[in-house]
Image 1 (cartoon, rainbow, N blue to C red):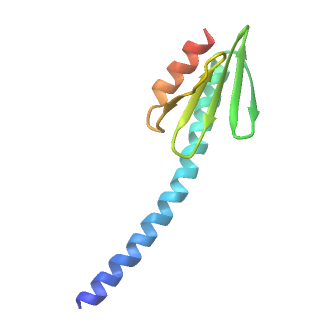
Image 2 (image 1 turned 180 degrees about the vertical axis):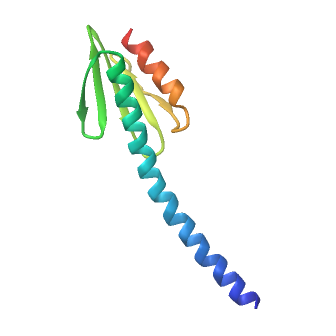
Length: 101
């Protein structure tokens, strides 16, 4: 009986791992939609470059980069992007707004 129980646990682990990979793709797409709507609300010109966004307002520019582990926000003239986790939507929006104002 114990062998069957451990085999069942092994299969459940594989299933959980596969579902997490699918969830990460959904998470990135959901964030892209939320960031896109935020950029529209700021009345700035933006375009899609690959999977990233590049937004411009007057003389200021910001690039929003979607990576597997984080979202990067890089203002014009900065050397490195500020990295945020996918559970920090408010901080990402604040950083974009601050960079464009």
